[in-house]
Length: 110
Length: 110
DNA sequence: TCCATATATCAAGAATTATTGATATGTGAG
DNA sequence: CTCACATATCAATAATTCTTGATATATGGA
Image (cartoon, rainbow over all chains, first blue to last red; front, top):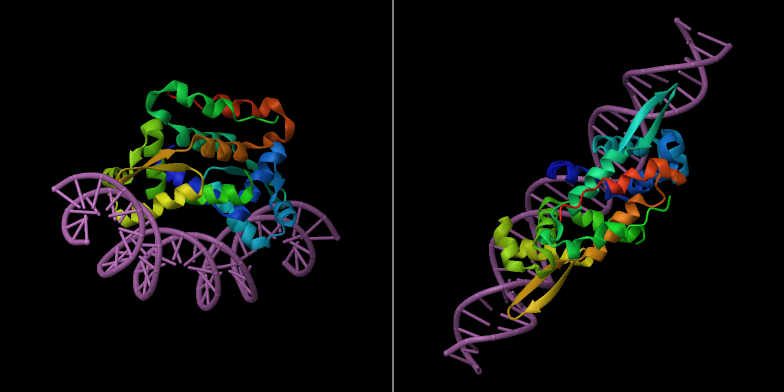
């Protein structure tokens, strides 16, 4: 992950409709959801959601697989992991006692 | 962390000058850096950087302390931790075997 | 082939955000 | 008090991004 990629991912997530879509897909797990269901669930128009899913995909945060007439989207764990790693990279300038609590306190609710 | 707070933090980080400033402060550790030095280091104008630091601060990603005539800024670990936690909240819909690798693979270089 | 469904693309206007020069505020020194 | 330095605020323009209606593409079924 480099700065342009991180900016692309952060910009993608910095709009409410896209943040909601991404989080919905995170909650949906590996199965993902078809585009139409994402739009319906979040109360968005079809073409707006299509554009937003495309932006999330180009940012590497979600992936898609065609399934008949639908296209199913999935959260891309590698993508979000890359972003999180980039944000905490070189944290605390090499002082582990300041840095260690950063990640260990993020509770993964699974 | 709720959605408005997360959007505020993500928007703050989604611009190159601010992302660079935030990462510089992460690398600087608890000591932080004075505003002027941040602007000089990153080649930004004084008032632009002042605005950007203000945006990062309102987003809860950095803090400031006055030090004589200067104002010293510091990364706010609680802030970034809150954002990271929000992004992976409820990941994988409760399937730990998919979710666990997410955080454990973020190498903290300290 | 023709139709219906699902999703994507396009173009234009609306809204938001960034940048800049000018100026204001706050602090310490003399 | 006045000056110099450090940072913040303001207002206007520039640039970017969002939304929307219309339309295009892709797939499967009859």
